Length: 461
Image (cartoon, rainbow, N blue to C red):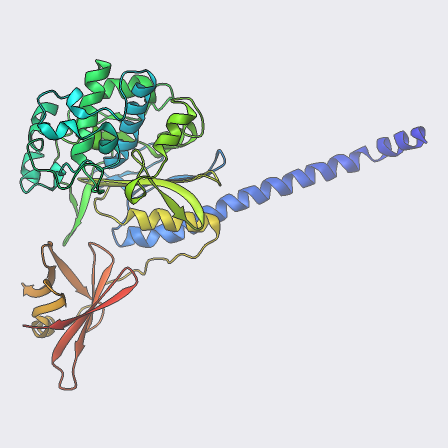
């Protein structure tokens, strides 16, 4: 019997080998097909955003340790026609906060601080409020300290170099917005103080501490503190979408955001960060548990914590002049979506969510490409006026040089573009306006279409 089996196997070894190779090729081709299908779906989703000048950047999608897509779209520099790639370096904005929080936890594990310490311990000249504000309050945006980035003079002061002491002096004597621990209110001021604590306790600059304790151990060689005067290979230029299309973003001196938003990175470096957070390479599991424990408004230590597609998710967005960023981590599935955009103010949360929907086979919508039509601009005159969207919130329509503009209370003025005689759209963000006329042809209201909602506004003037 054994001999017969031996002769059978030997006699059919060629057929068995061919069958095995065939099965292997089928499996390999199916994996390639999946990858190509994902890329095609992402391209189909992103291309309308590019056509509408609403996207330029890098995207990385990974699952269980495998990169499914890593690709650049649009231009890193539109003036020199340099395309974005997976290696393009983008300013992170507030994604920097998760690295600041990690540094604090590393210092706590070394016994050099405790998150329950009052900040007066590190800033002896801080006002009396420093006795009741803790490091934990700073990490979770529950300190009550007003965010200096919301001060009226911020745009002006953000262009000049500032030491940590000078930046802290701008807000430390301001009244608290609420008692520490009572409420949540996002505060960049709190993370500036955290950066100063890291420097005081470690005896190193914030930049050097992160480099030696996070970036180097994880081999994040394309991540660091951004300096305007440094020659940084593969650095993306930042833009904003104005009435005339893309414009160079306003200058910000990177000494200002410091530990609240000063870092740059690549999509592939951020993926190294994502993988490390499933391990104890940087801190113990107990410290990671602190980082990812939701406090008020589901905010942990530098992370938003919640659910999406019935899956546990931790995420954060960043925004700084010229850049919009987001990282989303679906923990149970080990899915990571990273979106880095070198245009400020883009809807990065929606984009990242839709990319995750593609991975999970959930529903998502492809942006409609809207192109302006030629029309008699004398029609614009009938739309001029004020429209009340809600109490104390007015949309004002004006015209100038055969162009028509909309401006909401307290917001910038944006040009609107005609799709038809009564329907208009904005390029700066995804919103449309429809003007409604009565039987006599007089305009009586407009309807604003945004985020899936139709919001009527009666013409009052």
